[in-house]
Image (cartoon, rainbow, N blue to C red):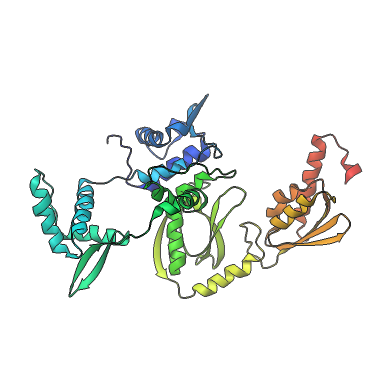
Length: 414
């Protein structure tokens, strides 16, 4: 098959983009899920969208191609281009322009009348082998109704079609749309709206801009739809560790976004495990809608009950929680440290013990998740206590390793 910049199925291109963007260490011979020719076609397709952001390096195993982006220097997420490279047929193009042109001339019109106008007033002027039937036209009109381009009205047993009335002036929303397109989890919607403008604002910059997760927009949209309709879904998940796909029927409840790396998670009730658990969105390949869930409120209450003890995304199977207390010394001139502690405490409580000493207390599902955050206060921590002794052991072992690196006598410090 000849190479084309356009794609039929975004799922496949999402996998390749992830390989290039996230990993960037595989060479041509190591892409074993597809043929070498398939790899070359996908690479050229990605380069046509992201040529300015493609880089490569060579090692003993060969040439490794990867995507390199400094998110602080780009005003718009380049990965949105992948969504706009969808294939279409000659019939799609004909129906798009002919139908909208006909509806612009008529307030309300029947399907049969639209078909007659297309045949008599448009196709008759060209030498073409394209033929249209009512079924094809009806499907296209239904698609456009779903997109909000047209509206329908009952007339006996038939439907009258008309163009949707668009009274929204986007010019006053240009800056808001530009910000939305980069800051919102479904920013790709804003990117499509920006395409309607001749000039696009380019003055927004983000210190922490996780452009990678734009590739999950379709998955995220379906999950929001399932949450809104309180519907169960079947998740098709690919486990990279085991190298095989699996299916999970769940009830989507909440979407969580990491403030540290931008990764997104689905909090859902699993029928299989009979409890609330997290799923990484970047591992979900496909979503199949199932049945409305009558017990949705009960599952949502389970999620709310767990939320009060969440630090990250670890939800142990046991019922008890880890109680942790950290005494931190904050100098009088270090108000910014106290401010940060207040801002990042999540479910924790801060108490002033007097003088320069403060105590952070929390009950967490799995306090091991807190260790990377706790490490950022090394030098100010006076004592750390946790009923999960594994947390204390990891923390103090880290300190010993740190002292060893800098040649400090740990016995004189601990």
